[in-house]
Image (cartoon, rainbow, N blue to C red; front, top):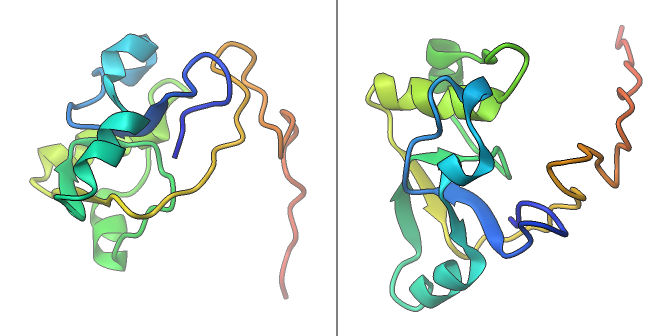
Amino acid sequence: MNNNTTTHADDTNISLHLPPDPPYRGFYEGYKFMKIKTIESLQPYYKIINIKHQGFALTLMSREVLEHIGFRDSKGCCPDSCFSLDLHNAGIRQYCHLKVRCKHLKVDDKTQLELLQVGKKPACIELK
């Protein structure tokens, strides 16, 4: 998945490096996201690669991992970064299938606007 549609549109949301720790103090450059062109050049040779961080795009995990690691944030920021750090510290590897693609409709990191959400909290539906 691309990171956004403007300033970092050529970057994926996966990295071979751990995110900044603590994440709330990090900057975009510290994430060292892979370029889309790099992924495309790897595809003929690799289907699945080991990664250190991913931004929760089409993430698949087992219930056991979720129960063991759980979710947390870093002063209200970056639950995906915290999750990658916690997985690494627990010795659990992350992998990325290079053929899976989706388009991230995020505008950019400066305005924090999402084309689908536009900064609004989604309505909560209670099932009975």
